[in-house]
Length: 453
Image (cartoon, rainbow, N blue to C red; front, side, top):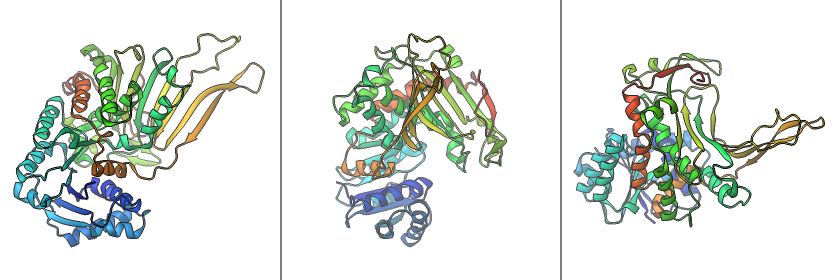
């Protein structure tokens, strides 16, 4: 297990909200020892004392549920370095030492290639690992180039392209429900499933993230990575094991099976929107284009929907609807599996009988099954919902990701060819949207999104 971690971009939101609390969770659970070292690097004109003061405040805000001694231990393990990720001498001072180090690039994706090249020139110790946050590149060409640069520095199994969705309990919930229950796996195909919705709708607005979000938008921020990863888990063939090679191979198979979108498909099967002024929970919300830091000329979408089909024996004929939006009326984060209606009902009136829906809740995490049960009067029907809550995980998603990085388990990270295939799937959408071939639809904040077609 590696006992040194370097974070570049250490004073940013990712570090404050997720990485420092994740490390604190690892310490609390006994996964980190007294010898753990945390090197924190940023261009800020800070020193170690100021960084520790800042980290203490952030952990009180975002990790206050963890024991005080665990928070103090993580803060005490930190050393701050003022360094630019494009300066080999500065980077060399951060990673100095003979032992392997895990390097977490908590940086904008546009800096990944230059940062990796700088690490190469700075002399990364043998056995070290590199961690990158999504998105991995900005399109297919940049993803291919990033993979080329990474391959020159470390072997593929030392590259962790992390997606915290894969560390959520829902991942094990989807796989466990499918593969460990005979009642479901025989039905897990297009003969029984009409549509799968993979949805991340939220009431949250921009929340001060214009610097990143206005360059990305909903398609790149959510659909291209998080939601495609969930598609892979729902649709993949049963792997031989949950080991790194078997699991990743099956995920890549799913992406390769996605039917390429033609120009006509993009027009019919994709939608993009942007929130207008409105009200959410009784509060006035400005239009996206009036938010601080937003450039209206970018035509950045805050709502994206893509309907995909898979050319495979199991899934031919099933639609997969991937959707994400901001500033909507309600939070809805789930994978909803819509089963086909039964072929025949021996009743005179069947209007109240709805197809079954199996829902995997993402936030909060849980499981629900919508059935039809007997109504209060003879030969009548009523909806019936079965629910189950998932057991609390010992570690938060970022705690699990960091543990995998430090112990060298890449099963839940994204392999290079997988990252490229994900960009290939959405390349026609990105191209058409950039040329404004698909109009951007306005929807009031606090609504259900663009009006139904």
